[in-house]
Amino acid sequence: MPVHEKCRLIKKEQLKEDIYKFKIEAKEIAKTAKPGQFLEIRVTDEIDPLLRRPISIHNIEGENIEFVFQVKGKGTKILSEKKEEELIDILGPLGSGTFELKDKRNIAIIGGGIGTYPLYELAKQAKKSNVNVNMYLGFRNKDLVTLEEEYKSVSDKFILTTDDRKLWRKGICN
Image 1 (cartoon, rainbow, N blue to C red):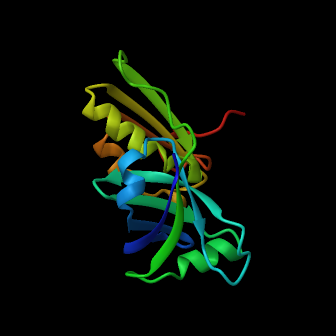
Image 2: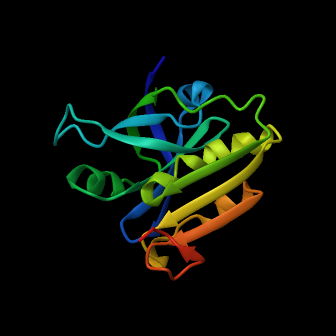
Image 3: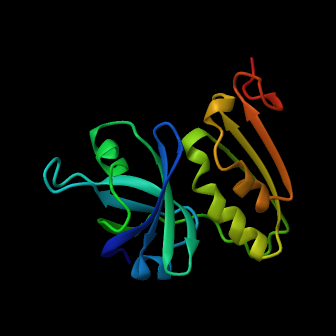
């Protein structure tokens, strides 16, 4: 069941130009959050007061949740300008989350670009359950690669590719 909560922004980190990682204190949301779920974030009451921005959960740590987003429009631009200690209006967790890990011994986790961020929590939970994690991530180019060390820390095998062939293997088929 989703919870409506005013969450304190504990840490704001700019990973790349227009890509941010926020850590929020979300005591009630974190209690039931699972890998693959997302948050609905109200960025302001002044512009689009009814339109929330859906952003996937990246990491759950106790009573804190991290999410990563890319500035794509007016709403995410406003969100990126939030300051540490500000309160953010959040509804979550939403969505079904990902599959159950019980009875799994090996999994392959595959993702690309901005879609890689919710995969971290899944890999972390799999490692806690003694599941072998093979992670395959792709980005458009080397300059957009983010959180590589975090992903490596929860992977038994980690393959990183870029579409422009600058890292590892060719990232798309021709």
